[in-house]
Length: 203
Image (cartoon, rainbow, N blue to C red; front, side, top):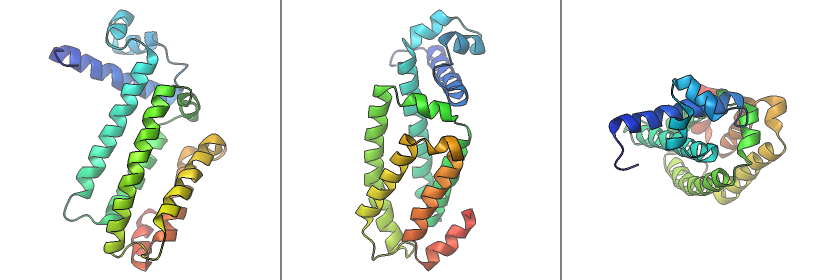
């Protein structure tokens, strides 16, 4: 992307934003490059000059979304007046808001894009590492139980999410409901009484 003019960079970002909005709402397959071009009042050729195919567009969009989310959570957690439970509640609220904009069809179809899945798999592994540091901080702050094997908890939580995806529970119950029940189940299990009191803010 180096050497691009400000206009070209701004156009690239507009295409990315419009495409991801369409993908999340309608699914990936239903959205054509023509649709994105028409929404932005530009030519299809212009879209293809910047993104050669739909998977490239999808991959960059997923990377941008994850980076924005990570930066927001990092900035939030590093504020002096925010403790672990504040960060956890912010994480929950942000994820619930994100999921409210995503069609189940998008989740079905995104699994067919191998480059995107490889990126997400690596991202989840990195987040597992971050989770242990976060949990350690929560134990020190008195919100998480010190008598729990968190390697087991993280592994089981990961498998619960994987099962929810592969069994397509979200089609029957909705994305937000599945997310809420999985995350609250595990959070309640690791919280001390102080942590549980703080958790009431999202109950």
